[in-house]
Amino acid sequence: MLFAAVLIAIVVASVVFHLVSPWWTTPLASNWQSMDDTLTITLLVTGFFFIAVNLFLAYTLLRYRHRERARAAYEPENKRLERWLTAITTVGIAALLAPGLLVYASYVSAPRDALVLEVLGQQWQWRYRFPGAGGKLGATDPRFVSATNPFGLDPADPAGRANILVDSNEVHLPLGRPVKVLLRSHDVLHDFYVPPIRARMNLVPGMVTSFWFTPTQAGRYEVLCAQLCGVGHSQMRGAMVVEDEARFQAWLQAQPTFAMALAGPATGTLAGAAGGDAAKISQGQALSQSKGCVACHTVDGSPRVGPTWKGLYGKHETMKDGSTALVDEAYLRSFIRDPQARQVKGFQPIMPRIELSDEELAALVAYIQSLGGPAPADSAQKAQR
Image 1 (cartoon, rainbow, N blue to C red):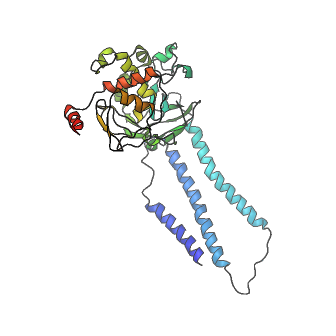
Image 2 (tube, one colour):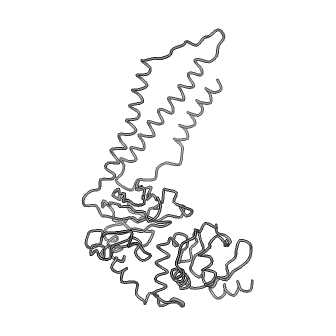
């Protein structure tokens, strides 16, 4: 009796929890209503069997509970019952699989006129590429991958030189226009996921995966990585901004092309750098992107997994053991080489060891130095401590 009551209580509590649960799907912002419908069908089918099986168990516990002078009848098989169970199970499985297969077939078959967007995932950041004026993505090859060419674009391919590169976690897309997304991984398995768009797909190293969608609601949507990809997985976030065509085109035209990246940044943009060669600082900036440093360290002073690089050079940093250290060239070199040797107070020791040549290390340190030091008042106060 007790077990039967517990099973009935579990069924009732589960149904009530579902009805009052706050964890509903986010508002739909794309054309994939069919994906929501498929999820609803799955929930209804599995919910039906969950309720039916548990209530049947409760019934059998009550109907065939132990009684005096009662004997169980031996029945080795029941052909009729087996046929019913086989038929019901077959219908249930078909109801689960068929809608999903139909929706997935459409999900990976993009329209011919879809805007092409390539997504490159790397621990722990996102990058994006558009075809550009030529309307074609340039050829790529792993042997061309470098700090200044993370996509591995072939410099000799004319189509690739017009490609538009977005070296940022934020990407803009036009409202009401189909978008075909091509996905590649720079290192390990990632998953590109935008909940309101109902869009997600694995980024598998060594291959290109794809899907498509049409944004139907303007707004700013969070991009997540839905595969555990390392210690910084939770920080692998980005943004998808959906806007009207005119604003999208204005944003797109402001992004650099691969040809501009090959030419290198204008020296004038580095005029304010405190010490160091402009080319070395440019190399360090590229390394901070290609090695994934920007996933944990910001350059605008905002907090993240690791200390911000803005105003870091020359600062007195407090360690977990209470000691302080001056952030100079020697400090940065030793910390980058062996990040687990010391722990900065207020930050978890999750920084991985990054393989860098002496030249690359010097460039990265020069870039951090170029981002400036602490305010004079803060520096003096730290020194007095």
